[in-house]
Structures are given as structure tokens and as C-alpha cells.
Image (cartoon, rainbow, N blue to C red; front, side, top):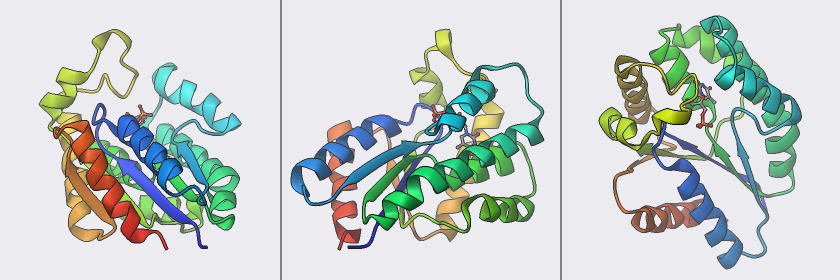
Amino acid sequence: MSGVFITFEGIDQSGKSTQIEHLVEQLNAKCPGREVVRTFEPGATELGAKLRTEILHGDAINARAELLLYLADRAENVSKIVLPALARGCVVISDRYIDSTVAYQCVGRKFSEPEIAKMMHFATDGLVPDLTFLLDITVAESRRRLSTLNADRLEQENNEFFERVRSGYLKLTEKERRIYTLDATLPADNLARKIYEVVLNVLD
Ligand code: TMP
């Protein structure tokens, strides 16, 4: 049984965590022979947890340094969690991965995509997801769902930044066939059913 790598993407407050929880529950209940490993970026490894605190809750960071910290976190996540689990034949589900960097750093922060693509290839050793769910919501809806009380550094960016990030994601869907886009304003149960159906199709 070969491993399957599934990622969830979307602008902040798009409901990724809820959908990941539903999917993990469904897979555990209905495919008991299949080990499911859940991870996230940034922050899933010991080093990543420290990087997450610095990136999201620390003092202002230079945008190039910020990008490199996300990539360092990803290199750890891939080598310590994702690749070993895929080698065991697991279904690996990651809350954010390479498409976040394209949307937030390349499009949001306006860095060169080809240049960053090379760096991402280096950080991940070329590992691309088998399937990606993009939970799409408008920036206005994301803002409505966001609690301003404990917003992290990224969540405090302005609306133009998030409009660029969302458009970056939507542009990616035009060229990446692995990305399955969903209207994230649909009821959560409805979304969970669709996601599970698509996942069943890629499991062997
Ligand atoms: P989250 O864990 O709540 O989704 O927050 C992670 C934040 O980091 C989110 O605002 C998106 C941002 N991010 C990037 O800007 N680039 C990246 O490569 C990743 C993985 C996350």
C-alpha cells in the first residue's frame, strides 16, 4: 500500500482545521486498516514549534527572513513527519504546505515565483501532494469570522494583502490539477461529505 499525501489550503478562517478533523474521523472509522497521520505548517516539529512562535507571535520580521523560516519549518516537517509516514503507507494530511508559500509569499508579499519554486524544491526535495483541497472564501467572510482579539501577525495584514493571497490560490487552481476547490461557505457537513468522496477516489 503506497502512502497518500493530502494537503488543505485556504486563506485564514476558511475552516481547514474543522474539515481535517472530519476527514481524519471518517478515515479512522471507515478505513481502519489505513494509518492516518496529521501534520501542519508552520509548527508540527520541535524546531517548527519554535519557528511558529517567532513567525506568528514574535516581533516584526523581514519578509525574506519570514519566507526562509517557513521553508525551514517545511524541511523539518517533510523529513521528520511526512516522508517517514508516506514510507509506512499512511495517509498524511497536512494543514498547509507549498501552495501557502506561493499564495502568501509569492503573490501576497510579491516575491518571484520561479526563484521561490527552486527554494521550495530544495526544502521539500521535490515532494508534491497527491491531492489538495482549497477551501475558498472571500476576504470579507474571512474577516467576519476572525476574532480580532487574538489575531496573529499574518492575520493582522490588510485586506489588499489577503485579496492578493486569495487570487494567488485561485490562479494556482488553473494550473495544478491536483487542487480541488470548494466553496467554504457551504455547511461543514456538506463539505466533509464531498471531501471524503474525493479522497476515497485516490486511495488504493
Ligand atoms: P494557521 O496555522 O492558522 O493556518 O496560520 C499559519 C499562517 O502562516 C497563515 O496566516 C498562513 C501563513 N503561512 C505563510 O504565509 N506561508 C507559508 O508557507 C505557510 C505554511 C503559512
